[in-house]
Image 1 (tube, rainbow, N blue to C red):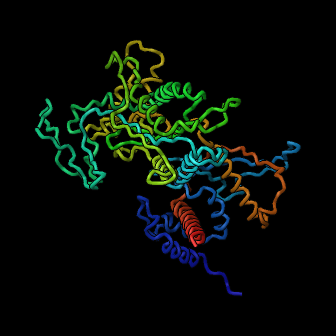
Image 2: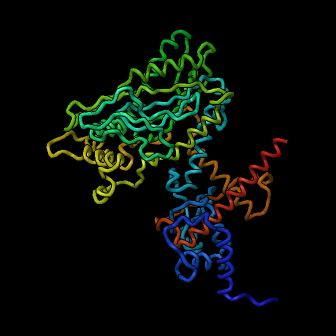
Image 3: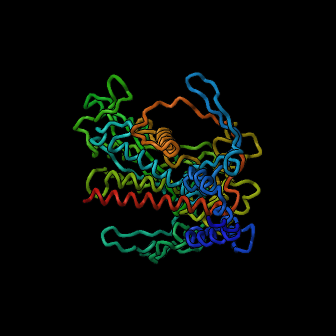
Length: 515
């Protein structure tokens, strides 16, 4: 039997394997690691990979799915017999690798955690598509319901640089071509003949920042969710003539995502489906009468969007408040199972934007505090001026003011890092489709079944025994992220290899089905 290799030789071998595996794919760190540094990324990763406990550690952190900054939990795990309620055993997390349990952060933003954002995107896709074609508790008959894909945009608060592509020719149009050259009262030319590139930094920037209505802009973002709510109420009222004409009760169900434009304004993409309410049970989703098509649904939504407005409370800088409406660039298109706007295309489109935040505006930050406001509230950029406006408008006045200031203009400071918008980025009506909680529960059960198969070594199809034990955790927060940069690299490597295996299996499955 050959002698065991020295630990230094194992570490050198592991370091070579890591260099081949990682290459330039995972070196997304500000640290400039060197193999000579004993506490550097290369050395710590090599020692971890060369340790006998590495397979157990890799299996332990695999449950995070490659999360960039997992949450560490410490404490005790208790096994409870569900039939008697008796605790059969207990163990401490000290017996686990690193002495903690790693759980994914669950952040939906791709700029913060790509792995968790991909899970969020996939859940959004299945949630949206189930409301179009059925499945996951939704009847298949929804595929026959009229559905409209609607885009609700904000009005203009001042001229900005833009990039518009002609749909017919595919050419980029001039930014702001005008027959006559006009200047604002600040002396700036309100025209731009350039054809901007897709990554041009000036896109979304005001032609004259002094003329731009920043106050109205951030207030519109803050009350955009309320404007949407009022629009859905108005749309339901617009359904009453159709209900009387056909003698039925109708209901709108929707799935909606929010997206930032380059100018820093929120706009909504929504799938709006028309349902007939069951006469006996309001939770039953029925197909509307055949005489009601997507054309009628389009007209209902258009009238509701055009007639809805929201008046905000008084503000010291605007005693009468602001009146908020939708912009003129509203788009409503029916969804079909053929052509360009299919169910899969729309579901993928909404799911993609559900993982984005303020990146399009050039501003990315965590929640802003009085200590950090000076870093982000600069007047040199459009995003910085928006942050500054949120902070100024959200300041509590010295004089007496309504007690709900914190829940009106006061929340502008809380959501200054989101340029005033504090709503959810992906929402749906209750009866549109399944819920994220149900999707997470299904995924959790699937993972437990797979783990049980790996431990027991039998086929899940033959395992029909009902679970009689429950694991209850008594855990506390122990930190965020992996302990070393080397562990971070290795975790991303494990996740990358798992993704590559899944992608290969998916491609092979598609190839088999195509034959």
